[in-house]
Length: 445
Image 1 (cartoon, helix red, strand yellow):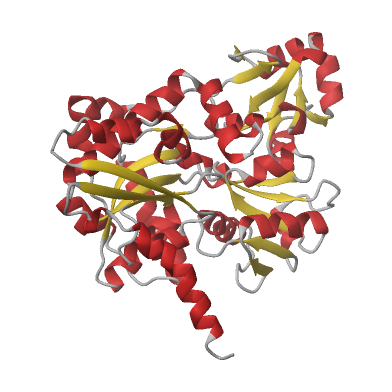
Image 2 (cartoon, one colour):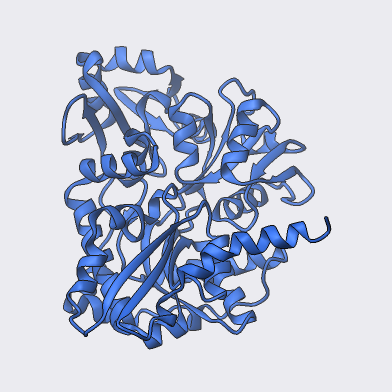
């Protein structure tokens, strides 16, 4: 009986060992193993969408170096198992969020299997990819209300980093001021629905999904921190050095997938929804034309700077020691892959915030200059709306119009993701007041 766990573990590892990697492909056939997170939809240009488009395989076929390439796509729920398989030499390229990327760097160095951050996928310069939500009937209305409460998050994730920083700004000790539950996103979501936790701090797409389903409401918009969050692509150093052309082919394909997403945001959302089971309306909230995430493979200095600031949070949680971010970041491959176009991508800024309506049966959305104009359109087409999105008046974070907190300020109708941000605006603007969504629609019609 004592040996059964060991046998079970070996059986679990067997398929992974059999998959191999490009490291082992010295003959005419080379298998490139890519670890990705299908439901972490800000990595789709290096995972879900890229896989469905077939761009990486196409780039590999164009190498014409006498080898036959195969791609083994391995889907995971979080970045941690991708890191474990990379340091074991079983995954060549992986994508994950900024905090897991740092753990990836630390584990790689610790085990003598260094990895490198080679490109970026989705990012938000203010931190809007992470949100703290509560149950729809919760009486919690601010971060201060979390004191002494149970809060679910995934320790070591960017969502946990947002929680820690937000609590610190609210004057709450993130270790002693709350009861933190370290749970996988799906487990935390179930806990929130079941009432066994008071709040959930998670990364894309969980907050938007639960809110869309009517199972949660926003308590805190991560963009209030005004600190960049992003997802990126990491590669094993030995793989990059042995197969630079393969890595460059991946990065070219990622850039092509990024262009496809930018040019066909609705089709891309539908494709990702089909592959993941997520509602397309939720995917579009994050990955749409004016979504919470901006996609660009360029490794922007501002994101690298934010990564350096994240190290202290992981050190405080005793998840890593010091990390040499500068040695971990290596953009030589993406620079070579994208050539003269890299400078333009590096300088590019996120699209301006805008209100959008996705009409039923439409293959494209309709943008509006102001939230009031969107509300007027929605009021006149109530039965013809698939989804309506509005940017937070303070942070710019896109949110579902019918889930936003609305404020009437004279003739203006202003949306906010979280109640505390709306109250702060009302306090600073005499005469402004919070109104219901129904009232906002009526005022705009």
